[in-house]
Amino acid sequence: MLAEEESYIRMLFGVGFFPTTFLTLALMRHVRQEKVLEPLGMVLYSCCRENKDRLMDLCHGNGAALFGACLRMTSEIDAGGWLHLLVSQICLQQPFLPILFPNLAAISITETSDIDYPKIGAREKYCVEQAVLLEFLCSLLCEKLENGWGKLDGHAEECVQNMPMHAKSLGFIVCIIKNASVFSNPGCTPPRKLPTGIPSIDVLGYAINIIRILTTWECDAAKVSHPSSNHRCCGRKNLSVMDELTTHGIIELCLFLLQELGPPVLVQRETQEEDKIEGIAESSSLSVRNPYEGYRRDIVAIIGNAAYRNRAVQDQVRQKGCLFLVLQQCVVDKENPFLREWALWAVRNLMEGNAMNQKELADIKFLGPSTSQEFVQMGLKVEMDPVTARPRLSNVLPYSIDEESK
Image (cartoon, rainbow, N blue to C red):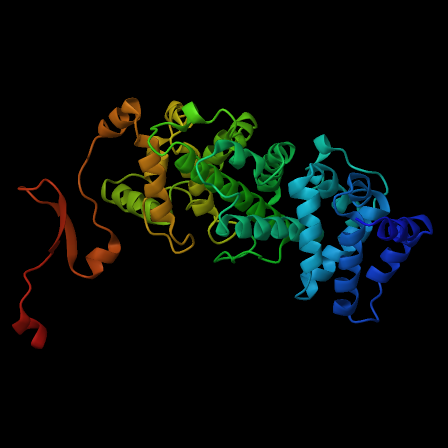
């Protein structure tokens, strides 16, 4: 930065434009917001980029109030390009996400005291500003992933230099998921796509998607760095995304959330129909509803990505007794598009190169075919082919064209 430009920036900060005057501009409601947000975002980015002290000033006190006001404006109008760049500086290139995120909530509910990192989740609801911040992060990470993300060309050192998020922020995202999952009760049936308009659900959804994107990046890095290796642990000396996430319990958390959901609707309907046939009392209720569309799928995707060439994760899922739980997700679910495909990816990665997992799956006893109510209504049933020993569909009653014509 030129010395003359730096002197102008120091003048803006020195005479009180930041944050007081800028905050006044951000809160002006009688002026069209798009006329305020873009120039204000440009000024803030120009003043604060690559300057840790000024970026830190935006993360607490009136600086956080200013940043929160800008985030709220972007939730109301389709703008915020400069703000995206600023979020990238604060949350991806610098480890300031654990500072900014809770302080946005403190400002939003007009509390004066700052909230330390361990106290996150003490409040029952999240705010719009926090949801928009995580939405920005998802957008930035998706853009990085689509653009090749750090020129993955076989050199692990370059993968590390271009790691998408600061390591200190990874555990904080897991912490957000833990707390948001407690307060994010389903708001509607069927569940909505993100953003749902309910901040607590949006915070949960975007935090989970951030982890899904990061684990996808790690899979891509493992494929490029060691394409012939069965397990990436032998080549993960520097690639620390999954190391950080597993240290903070992401696998245990995902398995717990999946168990809380219960089996997919299709699987549970089949179980209830079998219970009725056998005279067993009907279960009390269906599985817990998805807070947002794709919730179950995103959890399964994280497990699948984490298990890719990762023996520790493969063994952990088996030791938790959750291999069959993951296998149950291999069905079509209208509330979770592509659930079956992500579940097949997860099962494939859990089995790859792991004889114990393969044996446990092979030992699952096949009790017989199950015919769903939908098949019965169509006059079909599932039966075992005596030649191939595979399930097949057959007609319940003899079928003839002559009878249909009548």
